[in-house]
Length: 345
Image (cartoon, rainbow, N blue to C red; front, side, top):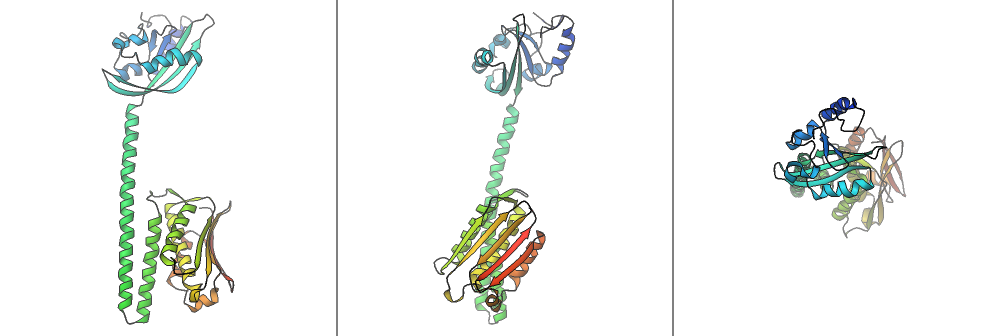
């Protein structure tokens, strides 16, 4: 039975077949119209093109008999005979089948049942072939995995190279006679170690990808504590951070500023083996963010005697300027607090 004559596949008025046929033929998704007995009344041109069929060999046939039984698929039988009678609409029903003529296919089936007052039924099946889409997604996931592996390896090598350079600078500092030259080399050593530490804590990410601040600062400060405190000094370094994420470039700036401020406190706030605490905070509000490092050490006046105004301070100011942030320093004999505040990142 071929419905391309005067019979409307949806059972509309006798002239409705013209419009209905035009709609079915222009639908881009593969579409099939079945009657209550699962006989194919019509199908879209996109269905024929996708599955290498034709109207002459399709319309009027029982759905399960299509192309010698190729479409007698258990998952589709469950949909047509069990799911549809209970639900008039089904979306995103996934079916996988190996067609002898076209090979393995992964399909998403959307179905809608139409009931008429006469008791007649029609079933609309939209069958979308997502095989190539899933292959592309799988390949993309594989490539992303390879990218992450390469980035991790590159990050590891960069950090190792920076540490090697820092070690060479420290060895050189021990051999020079000039106190000024030695101080410059030690400063350079600390700067490179600071960058290496930040580099190690940043998981490989793409440009402008988000990084959660709290775990990032916690890992960074744990690394600083291991390298600069260890079991040698009675100093505690803690992090208190609320939720929030920043892009990778901003995370680097926050990490470098944190490292410089923490190193400054550990070096100068607790002279002569003094006990103490250093707290790193990161807070976000509707109006902006604040990064602060505070200690309960000897305060700014004593720190200035140690010469704290130098390369580290310049680096902090430069990074703060990049983030359009303001630096505020509070100091007393109870300790020191440096706050960096900016608008929402």
